[in-house]
Length: 83
Image (cartoon, rainbow, N blue to C red; front, side, top):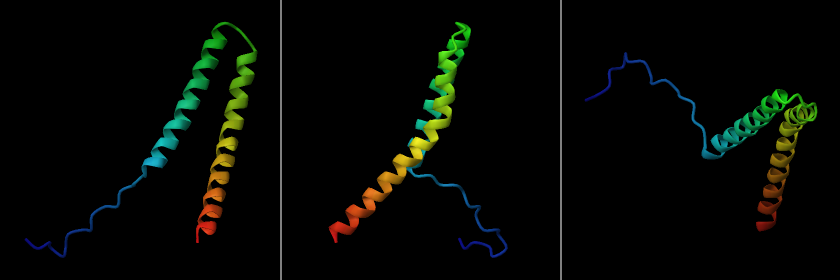
């Protein structure tokens, strides 16, 4: 069965690697945990957990980028030494 030349090409679909999916799940999990702690703390009217939530929200992505950059640099150095 030959394909008809007038058929449109198949649509391109997004493809994600396992590492990307795990990273997204980690970020969602940290955000959900921080938000849950914030909601629980606001029910008890404590101000300290609000500060913790804000710091986590601001610092977590920056820390994650630093860790990823460090790992990327270390793997590049390791590959160069391996040659």
